[in-house]
Image (cartoon, rainbow, N blue to C red):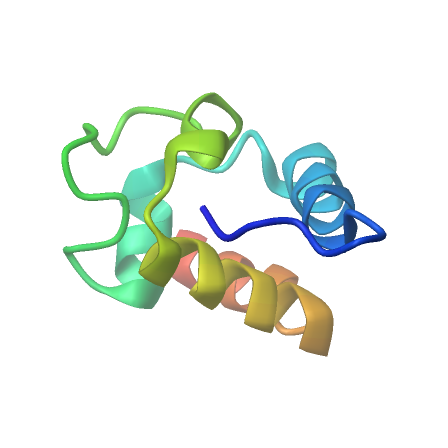
Amino acid sequence: MSKAGLDNRHRNKDGEISSKYGGTLLGTLRKVYGPNFAAGYPGTEKLSDVLLALNETSLSQLRRDHETGHLGHKIANASK
């Protein structure tokens, strides 16, 4: 995980993501981001259970989509 800035912004974003999308299964997120998202964890795990252990690539994808307001829409489409 990236280092926190002076204002710890990345931790705040991770908390927002976890509270809004923490119940999302990794299998659903792999439909959005590809099979290597959260590699090493089963698709049945919830995002909230692995969020703090995600590698930088997976975490960056989530943060980018969360910050631009696209994460919820992408998850909803992948869940269909």
